[in-house]
Structures are given as C-alpha cells and as structure tokens.
Image (cartoon, rainbow, N blue to C red; front, side):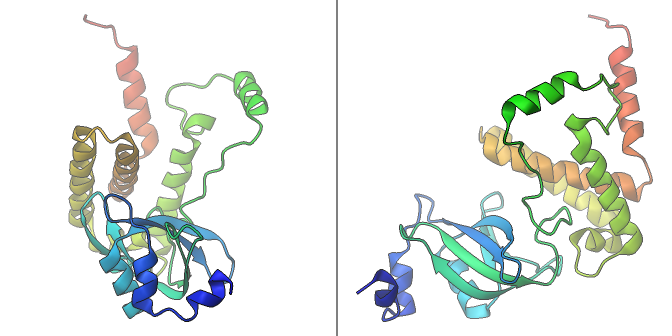
Length: 240
C-alpha cells in the first residue's frame, strides 16, 4: 500500500504525531495560493498554531521574533482561508494552500517572494561593472531600487487605501500607530542583534525600514531628502 493510501486511514492526531518538529518545536510552512499556485510566504508553526489553523480554517503561525502565536491577518485584515494542508515525505515541512483576503507580504506585495536573483552571475557582474556611476543620493540606482519602489508602493497605498492592505491599516490608524510600530521594530532589531542572529536581524531591519518609509510618507518627507542629508554629511570635512 502506498504512503498516500496509508495516510487516508490515519486520524488527525496520528498524522500530527508524524510531524518532525525542529529543536525549537517548530516546522516550516510554505503558503501557496490555491488558484494561481504562487508561493506567498514562508512561516513557522508549532503544534498549537497548527491545531488552531486546522480548527479555525485560517492560518495561525508562531512568531519567532515575538515568541507568540500569530493569527495571519488579525490586525491587517489580510486573512488566509485554508483550502488544504499537506506534509512532505520527510514530515518536516508543511504546504498550506489558501485563498487570501489581501496581500501576504507586509510590504503590500501579493507574495513575499517578489525579488529575483539573476541566474547568470557572470552576466550580472558584467552588467554591474558597466553600469554608470550614480551619486550617493540616487535611490533609483540598481542597488537601492527596491527602496524607491517600496516608497512608490507606500505612497500609492496611502492614496488609494485598498481594503485589507496592512499599509492602509497603518495610515488609517495614524501617526501614533505608525510610531508605535517603528518603536516595536526597532526593539526587535536590537534583540536580534544582541542575540547575534543575523538571519533574524536581516528580517527585523527590513521590517524597521518598511515602517520608517511609512512614517516618511505620513510626514510627507521624501526619501530623497534623507539621502541628500546623508550625502551632505559624507561630504563634510572629517574632524578625526
């Protein structure tokens, strides 16, 4: 009898007992759109969040940075209704197919995987070498293009206020909520740095930069002004 046939006879409790949790009691979860099959995000579940997901029909995860259960969309409204749940042949990864009420990524992107790495490294290096030199405050240069694009998306979200978008939620709540999130992300960045966890630090700094860009948009302070200020400081005579 095949493994697939065998699993149909197992109870939910027996299936959950087969999951191989890591040393922290977590299992990685790939979230995929049930219609387009686009991979939306990668998160983690513990036994409790998996049970809540199965019982509620919506995704629940475990936040490693906050060490707490996380109901996806509870704050932003971008909930994910579960259509099916699978586990792989090694029982150490879950695949959850969903229908979403809004974007999966906190940046407002449909999927968290919106940045592509060129496959031909030699061609990428050649292109980079041939690229014209840009000034320090040129955020449209290839290296900082994502900041310019993110600034544009945030400005668009503020203007259009699409229902269910996390950025819409922040602008609707106002500057106090935005400042609160900046403070929270700054604290989590500090914790990640103190823990010497560069993988977590990368995530937390990304969250912090996103919320800082939301704050700049709320205050109508262009990112170009910040880059100009940094450039001016760099050009000042050194005193050391």
